[in-house]
Image 1 (cartoon, one colour):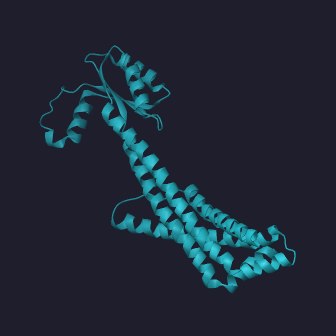
Image 2: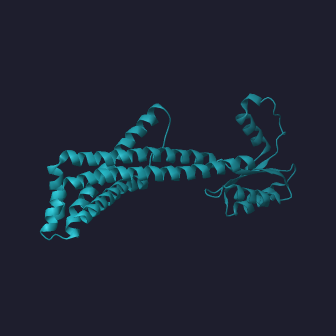
Length: 281
């Protein structure tokens, strides 16, 4: 309680400096939050495209429905498969006319084969897995051909890998810059209380006793800065979502991690700055 009271008193004695610390943490994390928002929406868009990955097995004309039903049951039991649909010739024709409306007059009755559409589970749509499923399905005698857009799947997977790697690298870079800026701001606060720290050491205060108020102060500033960054990111999200394009916002876990991240950065910056100051005394 004494450390908490000291931290609050220090903030009251230097409100401008305390506000500057909170604003610095807030805007640094806001920049990181904007990047995170972009990364989350890119990932969401890629996931939406990835959900369209499927294996389509074309059924030979005259195949008994019993054989098709048995095969669908077997395929549906594959660990990679989410669900299986059967598309009749009429359904294939209707789908083709819908997808290629400008060429609807080209298609005639019974020109498109029936097919078994195989939808894969999330996380199991990489080129290797999709190809393995296609090869297994191709082994059925009544299957004339199997298509899954091999080149398209490979490009999608490559794009996702590049986006993940670039997002991780840029995220770490943004985080490093934020930590440096925040650490420098907190160091200014510590230097402003240099005489106070020296007096505390002279009267026999331990390093832990000296550090405690600064750590609590850093924790409070980090929490407030994290909440400010969250508010600014939400405002930016709403502006873009309502005026330009539809976006998705962070889920509860990411929001909590962001606020706790601000607190952690505040504590780490305070601890490092106090440690450097104590070494000089």
